[in-house]
Image 1 (cartoon, one colour):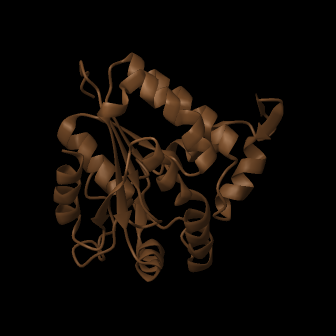
Image 2 (cartoon, helix red, strand yellow):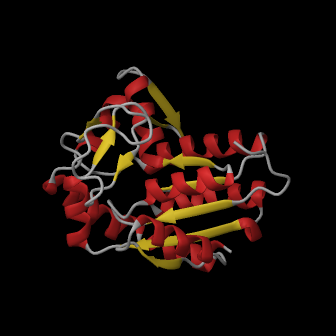
Length: 234
């Protein structure tokens, strides 16, 4: 990753299947930024933390076992724990002078109110941009129920004419897999409800803090979406 004397933060939002992870990877590759993917680092924490281990935050305890149950059914993990993990990652990257592009943060108003002041302190409001990738609910269900992830790096491969017959990841050659349970239509609808009820209110808070989201149509080819995002972040 590229160390910068004036690092930036780009927050990518969007419903499941909007392409947040794909677009964040493209930005990270193009500009040498660090990609902070909420679903990936939360999955890593769940799968590498002993199920009985407990994390204490403000007098409350959180275990990997309890969080895994939420994650597998499409319900968002507890915001205090997510905010705690996210802030630790932001501090680590800022210490090394890294610019950040996030996909999926912030998921709840609590996380935004907890972590945004830290982002302002470390990066400066003037260096933060917010982009909302817009996709219909039907489009979200279709994309998620058809998409696969690579077994090595766990990044998503969007479904399309050019990818539907692939069996190996075009980036690293590993086997493409479907995420059992998490990308079932029923679970996707739970995730959509969570996004509409718990994530969308974040936009109003960000705007009140001087960070209005720029809308980008996600129902385009990845290359066109990428072009629009670059225009949106300036």
